[in-house]
Image (tube, rainbow over all chains, first blue to last red; front, side, top):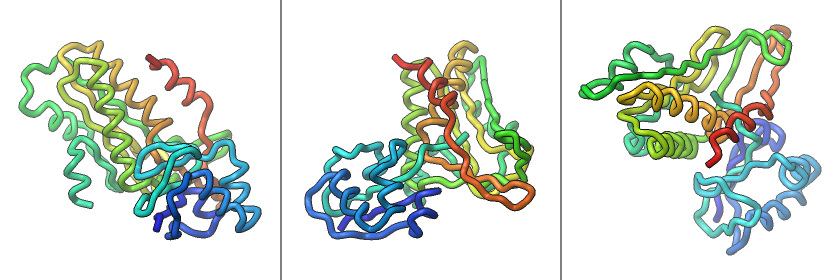
Length: 82
Length: 159
């Protein structure tokens, strides 16, 4: 299982803060392709979003990052702290 | 969770406000070699993008935010000779004039503290997972967009 987190506007747009999905040895990009099949808001937020930010296990990641069972994957918009 | 906070004693993410004098005193405690302390305090503006703001709400990513801030802090210690540093970032609801963030840096000589505080703030803006949501007086709620100028500010420190 992979733990997936959605933050800020993503959480609101996708209607959930987190979920667990069974994922075989794969990449973030493959996971995104699967999630995008859920509907237009998923496609817009994750697949067609040039500003998508990704983290795997609390480190900045990319679509090419490899994920395995037990990992925590997070999707969020550009950060605006400070 | 408590272990995580213990792991980064110079990073604090909290809903509570902070007192600059108290934090500066703690930072200098036990150091006789400090000749300069630079403290930056970020506060809530009443106007953003031309609109009046009534409430500003800050969200973070527990675990990753602490790790990202510590990474920035340690990078500052690598680039400049510093004696101590501290980052406090508030989360939750805040109002115009409230304090949001404190970056305090202590060094033997002022040049290093000035540079390091500036660097930490610029990197925090673009690298630490925080998100701002603002409420306008008419009740409209919107997420604050990231600024290109913040990304440009970060670039000046590129090595």
